[in-house]
Length: 250
Ligand code: BV8
Ligand code: ZN
Image 1 (spheres, rainbow, N blue to C red):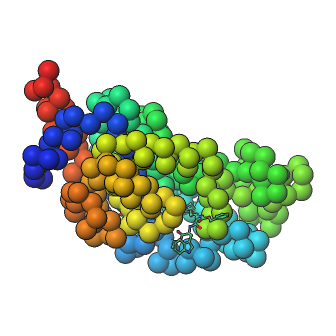
Image 2 (image 1 turned 90 degrees about the vertical axis):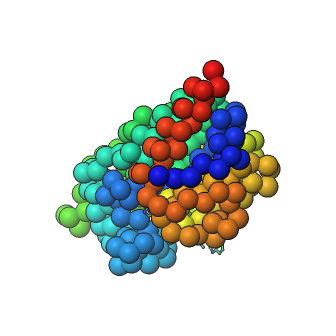
């Protein structure tokens, strides 16, 4: 059971513009390993070793093995109650933006509509040189790595460290954060920029900032309200309360 102080209840009921930022923690209860937690995928490898252009140029096979392993995991999992709670939450507010750092596609699978995938989507591929999308088979076992018709190497269509985020998507994510009256940061360690500055931008522009995360993060003391625990339990309870508050005010 979580507490609903009056200021939290008030903004849940009255906010018109809402923005959400999610990270790997919201998919943890689906069975997708997070990046930095125990058992996190990056415990075995370092981000610099794998999620960068240099890593791919120097060892494309290793980087492909990592992504194909993660794709395999994501093909076996599905959305969890936290993802579904955000689908319900979207129907309760007129202006609702779901910004995700995750590349697992689980928000779309759950049925969310207004999604900004600021770090790309692990199921898509593109050419390293000409960026043309590639939907051919990815087979790395026969030694040959997939190639584009222009001769460039095919890579996963995700944003690597040192790479720009897709400009139109990140610009819309910042616009949604700037106009938000209510902003939730859910399941993210709030360490990776520029995504990590979205909740700060929201609060600086007057939003009520809520953090829902298993562990404390750099945002925890800065947020207006911090709830530590699993998103799969917390988010359904919050969305149920929002529906109740809106019902009562009819
Ligand atoms: C750029 C796609 C520049 C690939 C990813 C020093 C200071 C500041 C910034 C930098 C710096 N040095 C370098 C930088 C820039 C760098 C950066 O921020 N580095 C960090 C590490 C310091 N950023 C970049 O390089 C970005 N690009 O800056 O470009 C530029 C400018 C001009 C011109 C050219 C270039 C690009 C960043 C994008 C990298 N790509 N992913 C892939 O997935 O393979 S980032 C990766 O980390 C994922 O997207 C992931 O989502 C993201 C953030 O991690 P989290 O989602 O937060 O996951 P994490 O495991 O960390 O945390 C999970 C949390 O959930 C935990 O807190 C845990 O407690 C909680 N949790 C667990 N279970 C649950 C839960 N919560 C609730 N319920 C549960 N059940
Ligand atoms: Zn190409």
